[in-house]
Length: 171
Image (cartoon, rainbow, N blue to C red; front, top):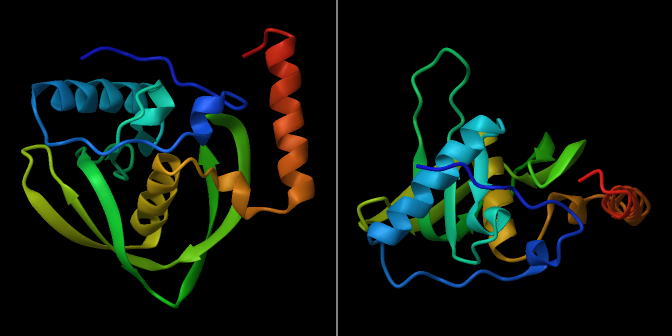
């Protein structure tokens, strides 16, 4: 495993749509391992491959709390099959938009299909913070950021702040 750099706003890669992987092989598992190590170090609860500059449909998630046993979830080619009509609000943040948090409304439950670390097809019904995290990470694979769910005024301010920080060499 090796730590990877997390790309941040305004990097245009974050708006790129990631490509499906043909299957889960040694290379994909290595990427999963690098992503997991990078996510834990950050620290975060989810990371999409595009956030480390790899435009593949790969996600790692671990919503376990400090002191609990780690329970990493590896998803290749995740796809939301259904979403509840019921909605939940969570304060979201993003490793690619550091130190910015905002309330986002999303479906409170989703059913997602994916290939696991072994390449086996899986289906998961996620609710609560896991549902939010799954949706947030799948959005990354589609070039969508959580700031796209907030007002244009707030989003423009955040983007402007990160563009300025990049110009000043602070990112």
